[in-house]
Amino acid sequence: MRNLILILVAALSLAATGCFQGMAEDQVRKTLTRALGPAEKYDVKISNTSDGMLLNGEVKDLTIDAKRVRTKDGLVIQRFDVRMLGLKLSKDKKKIDSVESATFDLDITQEDLSTLARSKVRQIGDVQVLLAPGEVALMAPARALGQTLDVSLRGSLNVEQGQRISFIPSTFSLGPLKVDDVLLQNLLHRVNPVADLSRLPVPVHIDLLAARQGVLNVKGTLFAKP
Image 1 (cartoon, one colour):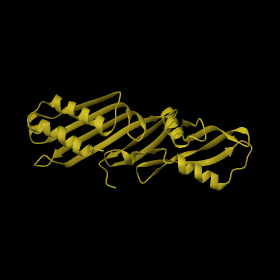
Image 2 (cartoon, one colour):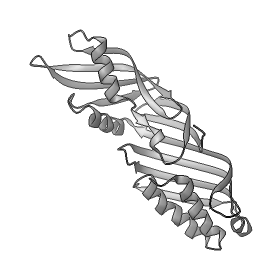
Image 3 (spheres, rainbow, N blue to C red):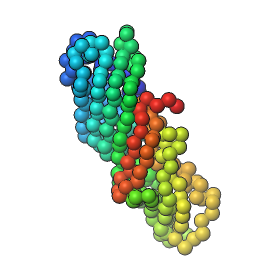
Image 4 (cartoon, one colour):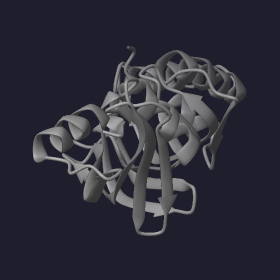
């Protein structure tokens, strides 16, 4: 997968060699599609940046507003906003020399998390992820002992290594049956991580994770060191 840093360098190099700003924005849009995946839209805007700054390989303010991004590992991001300030290319314009700040703010719906979870645990059935303030639930019907039983897990989400979002259960039930720890751990191994941002083509660090009604909101930093 093409690295997003190289994408930005390629696009900004166009502007720095005299191409129009709009062409550089269009190049970013096209290469984001190849790197992140297709989307309903990618809006890209370079602002507060003079022609002279572009010629010197500098961009004061770059914003990306994306909707319904379908990543290559199956995760769908409902809203993906990025803002980068103070980008500077190296003198040979082959790499990004520095970035003052680069942040992202994204939403993932419970419906899209449910679709991703179902792809991981097909044998369980119609898995549903339910999001509410401060709580996450996984619900599904399952066949056992000739009966259809209600699988229910309730708990919270946790960030691991600054990039992976995992489900931590507080309660787990399988209809009237007693569930042992081995079964629980096997299920969690299949479900987790519920979202893995380490697969994005740029290093990220999750700074804030919040479950709201029907939506998971994630805020963080781009170009984060591992």
